[in-house]
Length: 204
Image 1: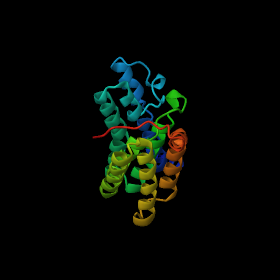
Image 2: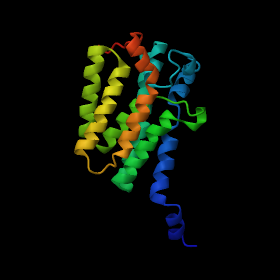
Image 3: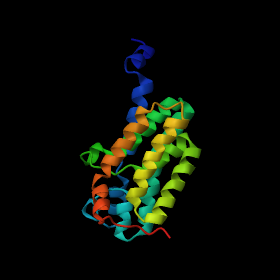
Image 4: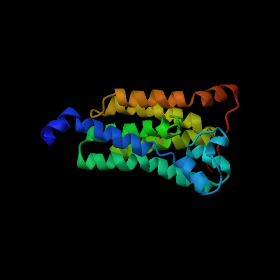
């Protein structure tokens, strides 16, 4: 059997970005970095989440920034690579799976982060204008309300509308699925927001 036939059977252009994207996204940097710097398992601190916001609760901003950038680049880098060597559709598929890999990593029983840093990395790679708009939205809401979770939820919903109204390359199912999953990941935050018990952050 020729290599072309094998690639056709396995639909290389679909499965390759899915596999690479998921593997890249599923690396639990929040756990690895906090262990490396002697803070133990981040899942036993704060909300138990492995993302940068919970890492910030260790009291070490530098570690939180490191985790933030690693979670950002684990979707940004593979998406950029696929957009350069393949096409925009493969890049979008790869980036989307990076976000899903971050939220549902097989290595820690699918209990991952909430996907916001990885979402921003993905957005910057495929549409820098969208990135600037969404980052501005997140910052404005975070500064005014001091709720990272509320900022993330509104930003994610805004992302969906941007793709719906101004992007013709992306199947709306992808940003819709990401939006739904990120909101589900914020379920406990939403409950705490309604009860007035959600933790605040300080940006300025």
